[in-house]
Structure formats: C-alpha cells, structure tokens
Image (cartoon, rainbow, N blue to C red; front, side):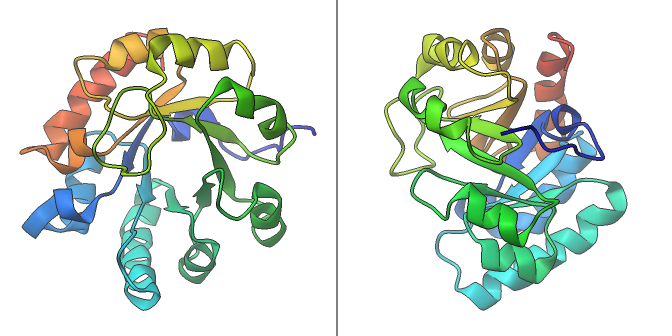
Length: 218
C-alpha cells in the first residue's frame, strides 16, 4: 500500500513524544506536565488513559488539544477512535489488539496513525496497514505498561529497522542515559512516559532527551 502524503514531515512530529500517565503526573496533573514538557521541546503528545470514563477522557483530550494546537504540537489519542473524533485529535495510536488501522483511517483519513509492533514477526502484516509510523515496544523493560511484551532490546529494534522503511518510534524504559543508543539502533523518534511524567522538572528532562536525539540528527 502506498504511503500517505502528509502536510508535515512525520519524522519532525514524532521526534520526541510524551505519552501521558496520570498516576505518574500526580498532583501536578497531566496538563501541567504537558505544558512543561512542551517548553522543553516535546514535539508530540499522546494521551493515554486506561482508567478514565469516556466523558472525562474527552474533556481532558479537548483541554489538551486547545492548549497544544496554537503551539503546533499534535495530539494523538491512544486506542480510542471515539475520543479522537470527539476532541478533533491529530491522530490515533493503536495496538495489535485494538481497532484496526484500516478502520481508523476510514473515519480519520488525514490523521497521523501509529501501530504498535512488539516483534519482527508482526512487521509483514503491518506493512500492509495504512499507518504513518510504528511504535516499537518495549525496547527495555518498563513498569508503566502492565501487559507489555518481553523487552526487545537494541538488537530487537535493529531487527525491526532492517525490515521496514517506515518511521520507528521507540518506547519502553527510555531515558536520557540510553536515548542516544536507541536512536543509534534505528529509531527515528522516542516516546517516553516516566522519564517525563515522573520528572521533577519535565521541561529540563525533555531538553536532555532532545539533546541526545540531536546527536543522531533528528
């Protein structure tokens, strides 16, 4: 299937993605952490909410969209096409057991759509899907996703990189100390949860990550 043409370079949008975690954000709240991380050059925000009811999820998504849009930072909704449509999100990220990318594309033809990959074995089928990038996970062991597959490691990331030309956004246990190594193994961008949501200073944490990403020219 031919790649969809986007108005903006997906690699630039996906350079450093903050994936939200309400529990890790704590009393500061998700919006405050997002605001700080964007000041630190986060290029994309993925709203992931596993426990909120739908109405609260939509309200949070709308608040984030209203703040991010004037700053040119895209909002991607994790899993939930209905929430993405309700808030006017820029994209949706789906996992292997979520709604298919084909169904998401049918309702959001111009959206930025990502698909999770957990192994080389999943690449062949994924290449037929109408997606803009792959979320490769988890690269390292992580406690922020309870149903995560076994860690791929850098070798697993390299193996997936060898199978596709599509952009790869790596996630799972990534922080400033290993970010450069992950980029060197073939990632086009990084998605982080605890390294930003649990940081004392999310803006500075984001700057440190971007500095490591720039080592590889992203």
